Length: 241
Image (cartoon, rainbow, N blue to C red; front, top):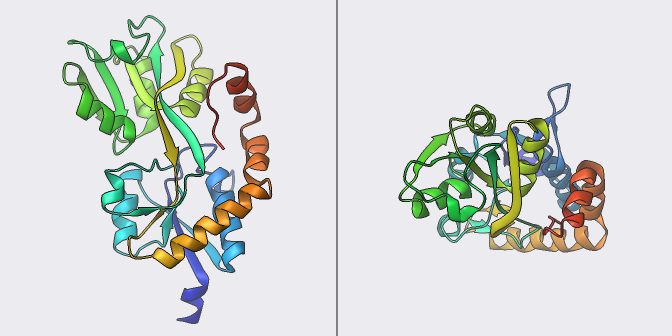
């Protein structure tokens, strides 16, 4: 039992580089893993990263399979009904990856009869599309790569996702896509905890404050997101940390 208490089980979906991913040896890596390890050092607990599908993270937290979620998760009022959130640690927003010849040039062009909009299941892009885009056809897929492929192949007019991922996916497919990066809906990411863990939440918030003051987020941005950071600042688009 003592060993169990010393562990900190952190849930994330390891398919969202550079935030949550695996290294060439198959070990968890990325921004969120680095944050988790720093939190573990702060709490003097050994971090164990548990890989779940994104829409399985909140259920896993609620039944105690994990202690918290660090997985680029947006703190929304909907999610806050079932779990607690730490103070925000990162600002982002919903943006659009569109095909080169897509008629979509902004979020205003999404809610049109005949438009096909692809989203990843369980994301805020999914929630936005279902609640707002009553005229368009909303295509829901399980994986980010599958959503990007729909746009690349011209089967979907737009993919709603966060700015950083849109930027990266456009860089991977520069000839087939355009990136509309300025967020049409701003969001914040936070660490997810159980509603009952009030003392633990206070500890996590104290860690985030210290980590920021010590330059931890700035270092992670320089290590993992240097190119993106520079580009976003040049374009005057709100950037992360």
